[in-house]
Image 1 (cartoon, rainbow, N blue to C red):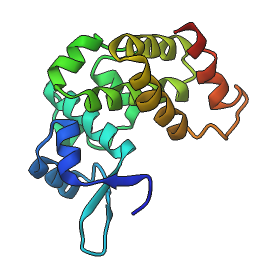
Image 2: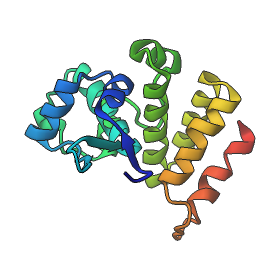
Image 3: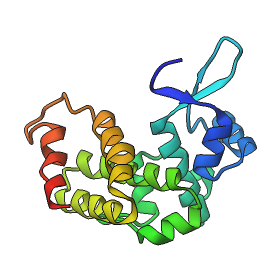
Length: 173
């Protein structure tokens, strides 16, 4: 088991709001995720796969057919569920999903999409909404730390490192 793939299907079902049956079906029929398998053939999912499944569930709940959206990139899924530039109402997301972990994965996915598109305003509004939705320890430990790992802050580009991009917004929040 790797650090990245550490969640069993029962945990993923709870965090995403999908049934285990649905996760298996989407994996088999649409190849939406490809979890690692242990020697005993047990599925292990990464945080990124959980985020993707959460976005797919939200998109299908909004009326989009899984067959049409299964292979869309994260950015397009975020656009489908209405997060173009800003995050949806944080309390509504938390109440609808009934799970803090699902909301955290949603915020992380939204931040990653904003960073990839170099959309500072979207990143700032998403981080601000998340800081209002969660306590400071949860915000830092469960959102910021995984976000910094996920976006691979060791890489640099013409726009600077990912940590520079995210880091400039943290003091404002």
